[in-house]
Image (cartoon, rainbow, N blue to C red):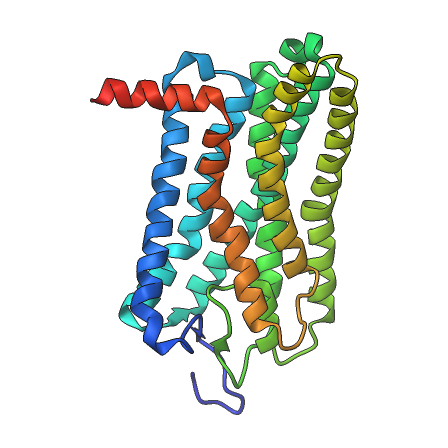
Length: 309
């Protein structure tokens, strides 16, 4: 804090789980295990989708990109959380907080768009199987992935700039586990209504619209599956979509609830739990959800382990 006529925040204190004094070591161990499982699990999916030619298909191309995204997404927040728990130094500079938020927003928007692309891929595969190789060719797949990674960049940079152009004064205690929009707006000492409106607009563009597109895809997918003559065909078709659908529900459910109320009162603990769901829990379960429910991934992992040993 720098003393002037009005104190100006030059760093933030991430309160995180500071109220759980006796569980800092336990939380560090839990989050370290989670982070390692995210790196190993998603890393294995990236490896098998690259190594085995049988998995060189659009679905696994998207899955490999999604796993890489999950590693990046968690690496924005978890290492800093682990450092805070280990050193008990919860300070983060103004610039570092802005950078963390910017990457969090960019990668979050990428995840929404990539999940939408994966739903579209399943829609084409099940509803238009004869046209699948033509529609989902290598060029289209690359363009869809490239667009998912880049479309949100200018918007999220602008969103971050607007949030950090607000005056933060008096208190620098951020009641959260990482730098995020809702707790930052609570510390602003000026009117935040314009910023809150922009948050809603961006949430509609990058969360609600992709979610509605995913729902639309699955309505058509389920309708097509129900028309299949055999139960075996229905089960096989639905099994290729169920893993993706579980991830969609986990991610969009928690993210939508969090960002639909950017400045609600007395919701600090709830926001922390919800934020952990979409930034840590979903990336942790992603490899398990896809591998345990996917015969091709299981077979590739078995071959990988056999070759290793």
